Image (tube, rainbow, N blue to C red):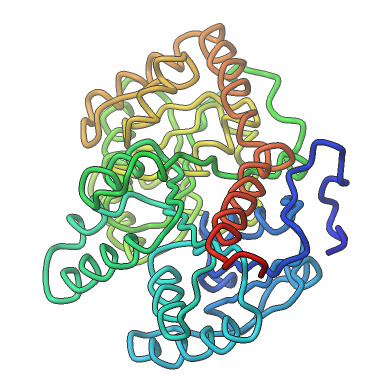
Length: 394
């Protein structure tokens, strides 16, 4: 498979699978958010040849179309679409017998597991968890659909040869609640294309109102109500303005909250901005008060561009970033703690500069140009597992 998208050229230390068929099963790339971005980065920067992309969507981005050896549209959008999606993927698996398969997210895993079972395929199967599965189920609430998802997830994970998550807590939940053996479970990094980023922030002086920024879907559990409340509490003693980049069902709720707290003139809901880089680098402080996450690109982007970050402890990884001095952290839902860390960051230019420098160092390990090698390693391991299952001489 030729590299036509600016990915790294093959080198003597490249970890390659042979020219056997490999398969990547993922949700619709037309979706917004970190998952679709992460999938595009895997395709752009991995070196593994001959990878087919089986997508739940009807279209793919041009870079993926050029990079993939083949695109298979399995088009699963609703629960009622599972049988047809499984049948379409099974037909591809029966034809190509992929040596190594990566399923990106729980629904792609369920479809892949069922398709493999339908045709009796024993190729290497890996799973990429992109959030925290147990926490997500608890947040949604337990009912017939959640119990069904949980049961199916346990069955499909038992078939996997390698199980990964993009955050420390995700790996822990897979081991603790789904009994995935430690020997086959591991943490992998999100991928960020640093080549797309602007040079980043260099001036940490604050001239005029302090500009706070967050990027987020406007949905529950992102802590955006906490952030507007923090602006209201800070208003009597700090001239702070907040821009929220994103959209979603809570937009009206947030607008009404800003009005009721008397900070409509200090809170701007900007909607989706793609890319948001110019807004990020113009901010004095990036603030991310989410109640729980896997590992959000929303935090990695300002870190990579040298923008000081105040974040909730949405998971173990956030606490580790704070311990490394790369961010200032507070407990989720703790508005007083959020206010305190915002004030602390705004107080000293030297602190903002120090946070930015350490953040750049921490973020560097997520650069797609180097971190994508983890996914090449997964394909290589899965192909080796598949080869070990073949009868001698085949």
